[in-house]
Amino acid sequence: MTTEIIRSKEMQEIWGKITPPQRGEDIAKVTVGPKEGSKVGLGQFNLWETILSEIIIGDTFGADRMDYLLRDSLHAGVAYGKFDHYRLVDTLRILPKGGSAEDSEEPTLGLLEGGIQSAEALLWARYFMYSQVYCHPVRRIYDIHLGDFLEKKMGENKIPTKTDDFLRLDDNQVLVWIREAASSPKDQIRELAKRIFERRHFKRIYERNPEDQETNTQATEVIYKAACKKFRKDSVRYDECKQEGGSKLFPVQIKDGRVLQSIELSTTLQKVPSVFTEYVFVEDKCRNEGEAWLGAKRLEILESRKEIEE
Amino acid sequence: MKRLQREALILSLIENLLKKGSWCGETHIQKSTYFLQELLRVLLGFEFILYKYGPFSFDLSDELLSMQGNDIVRLMLRRPYGPSVQPGPMGERIKSLYPKTLKKYEKEVVFVANELGGYGVGDLESIATALYVIRHRSGQKDDLHGKASYIREIKPHISSEQAISALQRQKGISDKASVLLGR
Image (cartoon, rainbow over all chains, first blue to last red; front, side, top):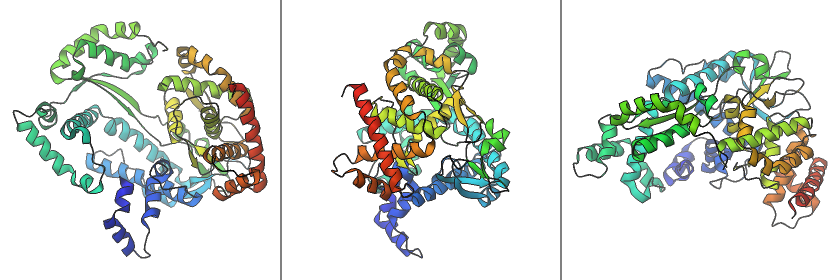
């Protein structure tokens, strides 16, 4: 869809008015990147197009990733998404991926040594934002409720794929649908809308934890399946939230000109965890029963449903 | 293939690469997994694109990060190259869950480790690029030099000699793989 919008007639006019004029295809390449670009017919990326797209949307130092951490941190009213992006951007350099001459010379985004503390702050900020905002159970369950609502509301068509139709489906439109559905006594999707409109979201009864992982590596999945048997399947939801990208490995040019790997220079970078959470939610009215049931049966469920290779 | 099942196979590949003396950095794992999936037809489900220096899968890169997060593998600092990926404390546990899968693909994993474990990243990048070109130009009738020219066209940092050598080595590996798979 991003590519479609960039290629649209309206946007082409805007690109043409920029000095010097820009081509939609070039903009699409750097903003979509080689991974998605291969799926939407943007062709082969040359080295410079790839690096430019890494600067814009790269996993570790992409401008988009830096921007959304700062922006989300501000709008969520939390401080831990902040870091010194001025210093970080000043010290960004294109460097060979490997450290020594025999290692990979693939050019990649790295840093001057003076920027490493800013990079540490960025990666910790990303970890905190994932663990406390993006993977927060209430935020996750509202994503699921919204998905359920839209799927029911839009039926077979789901999300429109034509640019004009897609742009019409904005926040205002969806909020009106939710309000109308929540107040319509005969509407089939009233219950789905009320979960959002009246904050009657499903409640978390289980979250992935290391102790249960020791007992059963698929602990959350087996508890979800057991909960589906205990309650009605549509009263239970499973969710997985995994931090994507954000490699801790990048080249760093030290003062004498040599290029070393980031984790050689920073012990704190070695220790930045990667967020992986899983939840089991149940309908609000099942919460107390669900918690009591799980409190009594958790170990039995984990032991009785050990992983079996199919 | 389930996530943990796939991770057990990747771990097995890492262990076999290490046995063969591979440095086993991310590049080694990326290129070896590409061979395992595309040439040996082990259906891991990764999507590879021709990235800066050869085939690369962002999904695999994420999977390796996730494996680090779950202690299935860990990064070990060694010199003179970048960090190598080693089995982590949860590695044996994950492998013990999938003995049939590991047995089923054992010969393919060992084959890839035997064939690629001795190469450094520069060679791996060019050999994997050669395989990518062969697989994506199967309709073209060009000879060795034609293929080498195409590699030079899309990856100018590879010299003509390197391209020809990579194509020859790739063909040698592909021929042996055909025998192994009985094709």
